[in-house]
Image (tube, rainbow, N blue to C red):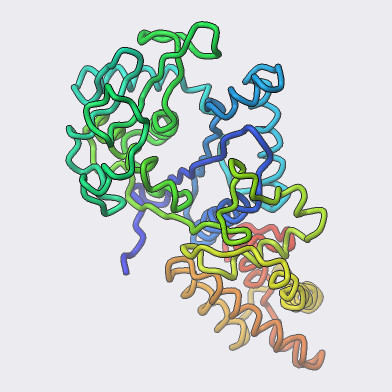
Amino acid sequence: MEVFTPITEGLVKMFVCGPTVYDYLHLGHARTYIFYDVVARYLRYLGYRVNFIINITDIDDKIFEKAKREGRSASEIASKYKEACIEDLKSIGVETVTLFAQASAYLPQMIQQIQTLLEKGYAYKTSRNIYFDTSKFPAFGALSHQSRAELSLRRIDLDPEKKNPTDFILWRNVDEDEEGFDSPFGWGRPGWHIEDTAISITHFSNSYDVHGGAVELIYPHHEAEIAQAEAYTGHKPFVKYWVHTGLLKLGGEKMAKSSGNYITIRDALEKWNPNLLRLYFLLTKYRRSMIFDEEKMMKLKSKLRAVEKLWDSCQRLSSTDGQGNLSPKIRALKQRFTAHMNEDFNTPAAIQALYEVAELINTSTAMQAEGILKNSYQTIAGILAVLGLFSVKHNWSI
């Protein structure tokens, strides 16, 4: 197992692919962003400073199509759902994001990057569009462990004028009566992939530590980001650690706005406590896809109550500024929690360690509980703050 070592000592730069803002966020988004929120929380728990950026995709065909259907501007649609997105993430305890970066604010950087890729010979123009020439980037496919032949079977951006099936779009020209943006290449819109590269390079320069997103984004999105960025900057690697979450399924199919197969975060919170949702998602290893099962989630209520009772007891029986020795049980919990989280963010095992202590405390006499919890406030608060449960705040110096 590789030991995590950030590029800059004491600082972690993390970028996570954000939503396309044309509708409300759903529970698939919740699962993904809760996990990365916990990653940022845990890195801070370990003493790192974390610069955590989520991009907001506010330039996308889905937004333009919805605007046209509703007789509104694309910026109105994007603004409405961007604000709703941030509000919904806060409602489920995602509080570690340093910056929500709106793609439309980075158009000059996108244009400049495309111009440089053209000048370097990594991009080419067709009659209407500009594409990245993947034949000029031999490492294309390395992240997804696919050969060029395998990638060619997964066709993207269909266009008979493309040089290679895997070439992806950097700029698409559109008719003047369509919503778009002025550029040296004509009236049009940037490709999806260049939006993220423009944001991350602006804030993190030519290399950073962690890039996250759902597993479905590995190809073509993350492969395209690597190709664009490394071709543009001439620096490798663009990202040191790639971290991908599994999908959330509903009724056996991926939860997705595009298919209408989803439950919004807003609707979910009318039925379920945000702490219960966090516990439910974190009890599955982040890399695994999972099927949303309301019955299974509801069975976790007793486990959540047990942990909440532990926290209540801790606040009652342990001084907030207690600096004495920890009891053997709490010392072991702290060690187990850290060991599990260091094991590729094994949140199920980390939560189980916490739950076992909760069960012990909740079945102990008052005197026994007080002995176990003596001086434990900072430790328990730190663990709950990492998991984002019960809105526990912490200074991370435990």
